[in-house]
Image (cartoon, rainbow, N blue to C red; front, top):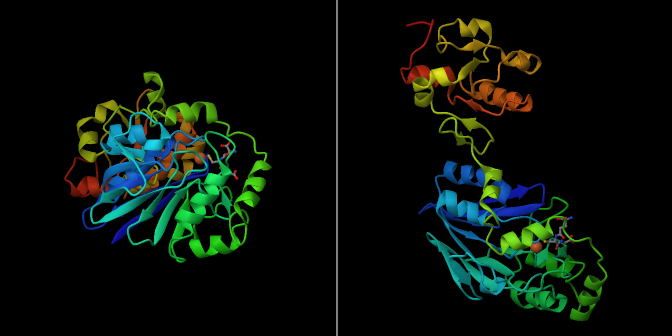
Length: 359
Ligand SMILES: N[C@@H](CCC(=O)N[C@@H](CS)C(=O)NCC(=O)O)C(=O)O
Ligand SMILES: [Fe+2]
C-alpha cells in the first residue's frame, strides 16, 4: 500500500508530498521547504518511515528547498534534474529514470517550460503525478523567468501529462487558492490556458501578457536552490537550529517534548510547571518534586510571574493540557519550553518519584 501525505507551506503556498511504501517503510519527499523540515521530519518519524530521497520538481524561485537540511538530519539522498544545473545532488535525473522506494517507484518525466530542469514524477501505477510548476490546477507555472519557455511548457503538458490516464490525479507544487488536486480529464477539459482546443501559439500569447511581479524571494531562493538548499555561509544554518538545553523531540502536532527519564535525572536544571487544578496537584497521582502549580486556565494571565532563568517543562495528568501550556508560554515569550508526554500517568506508570499522592 501507498502512504501519501500532502503538506503545505503557507508562506510560499508550496505543496510538499510524502510518499511511502507501507511494506518497507521507505519513503520519498517531493519539494520540501527549508522552514518546514522540522515538521516534515516529525511526520516521517511518527509514521515510522525512512526517508530515502529528497526530490525536487525544479529549482524553485520562491522558496528555499529543504533538501540539504533533510540530508543532514535524515541522511537521505538528494535528486533533481540533470538539466537543472544544480550542484550538490546525489543523483541527477533524466527523462525515463525511476526512483524506487520499497515496492513502489516514481517515473521521471522531463517537463521543461517553467524552467529547463522541470520534472514530473509519475507514480508506478499512473494513478498520481506530481507536476511541479508545469501544469497547476486550472493554471500553469509562469514562463517569464529562469529559463521559462511557454512553447516548451505547452508541449510538456500535451505530450507528457495529458497522455496519462484520464483518472490520473495531478498534484502541483503550488496552489494560491488552496485547491489541492486535479485530474488529467479535468485539466484537458477545463484548464483555461492549456485545455480544450487551445494551441501552442494561443498559450504563448496568454503567457506573454501575464505581467506578474517576480517572486519576493527570487534573489535568495535561486542561488540557494542551485546548491540544493545548502546555506551560502554556515551561519545561515542557524535559522533552523534546534534548542539544545535537553534532548528534545519535535512532534508533528508542533510541540517540543522531553523524555521523562531525562527530566527525572535533570530536575535541578529546569522549572517543572504543573498546570493541573489544585485538587489534582494534591490528589492521588501526586506531583513531581519541586513542581510549581499554575492551572492552565490562569496561565496566560499569570505567565509573567514565572522567572525566565530556567527552561520550563509543563506537566499535567495525561500530557494534553501541558502541551497547550507550552504554546501559551511560547506566546508569552518563553523560548525554552517543553511538554512532558504522557503526564503524571506515564510518570507514575514508569515508577518515577513523586511527592504526595497515594502509594
Ligand atoms: N507572489 C509569489 C509569486 C510566486 C510565483 O511567481 N510562483 C511561480 C512558481 S515559482 C508561478 O509560476 N506562479 C504562477 C502564478 O502565479 O500564476 C511570491 O512572491 O513568491
Ligand atoms: Fe517554480
